[in-house]
Image (cartoon, rainbow over all chains, first blue to last red; front, side, top):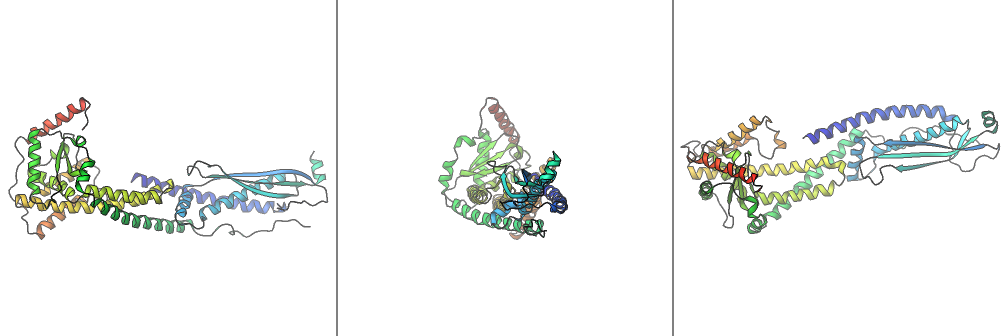
Length: 154
Length: 291
């Protein structure tokens, strides 16, 4: 009985806080994406040859953890198979947040754009079974900085 | 060349489905599956266990585990009462009942593997007369006759197989409750059947069922005294006390059994016997013996 009560409390708390955090995060992501849209992040490996840009490595990293509700939902999903929709939004947020942090770094360097953008994910809970559900999403690329902008910076 | 990031509409990488709706569908499906599989495996496991010969079951329980605290007089009395009751129950030839008595102040009595019945002083000393004691004893004997202890083990194993196969993920452990409630449901059936058989035996022995109800009144009073009240029926292995009382009355009415009659008192020395048993338990504990 007590176990069931604790479970329901955790599930409700996880759902409540998880949904609240998600809504807030998405609002912030969409707003910042609009602002940083002027600074494109491009997947192409070869940067424009003219003008000769200064280059710098920029990285953005996000560590994100699963709430109890999502974890339970995903565990249930494991029984039946199919799309783990509970995790989709979580990873979507992590990817976009990492990309934004990378762009933010590029912006502070006065970059025009970021080239050769790549993403990587790492599970922090490796080997710990289901005890922790945290992942890191890493976005990195080459920031291209116009020579005169970089010169005035120094 | 122009480099730009076009605005990408929301919701492409995320499936738009309300998480609560998803929870409802998945949880409902999982619970249904667990209950259905538990049911099937419990029936199967219980059915297999029923096929185990009684002598094999007896061999599983070493005598030393269930030694009795009763002195010879109490022992003889309980054995004789048990034998008198058994005359009025359909006992298959191979089944042998052994009644044990513990001097511990525990409010309980149970039947376990190998035809062993254990009564605790904590419960027995609250019984007002022999009729109530007979009802208790006959109830436990009925469990043995119905092979409930071994069938219960078989069902438990069946359900555990389902739970451990399905719920390898610790996040889903809480769903195991669904399997356990399935087991409780079976247990309640067993209790009802044992009550019915016991009432028949009490009627056979005394010619009326008066006094049998006293057992459940004692149980109810103890539960009230403990202050935990009655758990909702779903969470309890025994049918609710009131339901058991009602069922007994209904059965007596259906069979046209006399609801009251001369009450047989317990032997005059009964209280002393219980005290001796309590002392024996105490001294056994002090010398480090376990039973």
